[in-house]
Image (cartoon, rainbow, N blue to C red; front, side):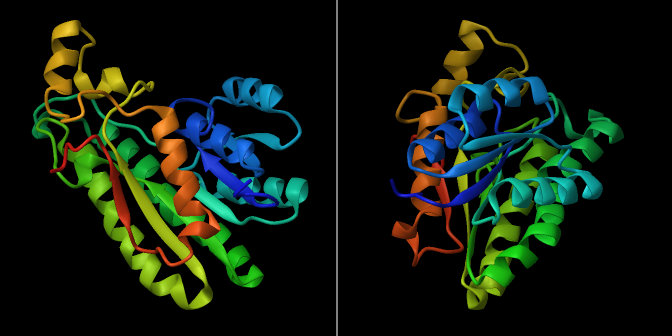
Length: 248
């Protein structure tokens, strides 16, 4: 029970990697706000996992809604110990100059602005408590970019740099900030990364991963649990690849 009595917020928590993180945290004793734009999916997961969870519909690119998320979590659980910025989107694979301005704006609103907004609203709570942990879910694309996903790659590179900057600034306040860099996995974003989901495209994608498989929600849950637990009390500013060796 490495997270006994901890309260966590997990954005994009109703499916994919976020769901894996939520399930792991609850199994380790945490109370978790399952945050998602898809409130039906969040409610289904909260119903399954029980009273240790709270479903909150939130557009993470909206300052007003992130503030409401903070209030809802405090009202339900009384504190916020852990923030996982997992919500993310991508654009379809294509030449960089063909990505629409609307898609570019959406990628940076969800993948980058959301980190700014959650920091703005939730870091003051952690400072007041005298402790906290933030985990940003970035990507191997921010370390070793794939062609035709240029603006998604850039947004995740931004998140990696933001993680390190946040870690340095917040360390004196006993707030740790880390990131995990997954390779693509069986999540709702997989088809968007690949462009089309066929056995041939999957095999081509998998051929770039030395361990020969996609990341799973359990992989992310296990890595997130370590980085957000007291076992990692001396770990901050780390951007951990959980990628089967793709970035080697």
